[in-house]
Length: 468
Image (cartoon, rainbow, N blue to C red; front, top):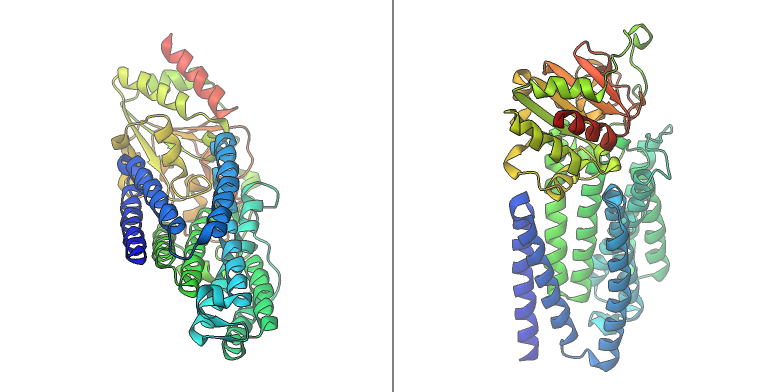
């Protein structure tokens, strides 16, 4: 009876996780989706604690683990800045990967606790599941650590490339497959740890050649890896909820990665193998950069005057807005412009920011109406009719070099066509290139006016000028 109730509780939790994913697919239902996810996780935890055979010692250990992890998570959530959210997500992915490694090791050395055999005589199917969970978990851990270091600025965001890199990755991947087959045949602990070491190295090598502009896809893909690692371990220990939850995370992460790759004109296969967008293309100024006309610099008062007389304005947020925490003042500016009769829209590129949905989260935090926020495909055609495009910290995703310069590291990536607006205001601290290391041709266009300074301060000054 207790087993049946536990299974039923896991089923209810699984349904809630599915509803959570559905809710998170749209900004208007994201809060509800989060609520479903939290309720599902609470049910799963209680069901695990009440599972037959847990015993007082097991329950105590789980509660201690929950207390430690919950305390750390609460402190981190309270202190984290929105700008640091992408690297936090990458760090959490690494923990999921390492957890899979630890559970696989526990299953190897204490198989009787999981009902998969005894030391030295573990079921072949369990060895296969264990080795797959181990390999994916180790790749997720080391890959996520590199992603964290790049996103946090503790490691260069530029692709790290060396001769024969792809051949080395392919060779290590083939060797990893051979070791898994050998491990399933023998159950050797030596091969187990050899698989772990090789997978750690492969995760490192797969992520270092990926450039900064492509990091949002990497975060999404690592999320998928962590899910599949959890599902593999779920099979090993016979936990239905872990299998379902891992599969949901793995599949949704893979689908999101595919959608983002399609939006960036990238190959999903290259994401899986590592090193896409890293063919050694130019990472600085394109040809003829030295001959460009000087940029036009304006003032917040100039911008306020032009926008006050504009009918259609499109705001293009990027990582610079996140760094300056300018989303609230941007919304305040938009509200003032609406009172002047302007139509306001927000254009979101699939990889704006450092993680999927980064800009959507920021705008939702500022209570920007959902119907004003549009994805690239919806709004790109409207730039030609816009009087003003207000670009606040979005660099690579607005760079025309993606369409014109075949030597550019971002060539082929669909961009927001802001250069088609009558006037482009580009808010930026200086002339530095974006995260991909590519100079933005938009700075030098005749219809572009640079507004140099902190994004929040510049926008606040525009608000003050509009109020006069």
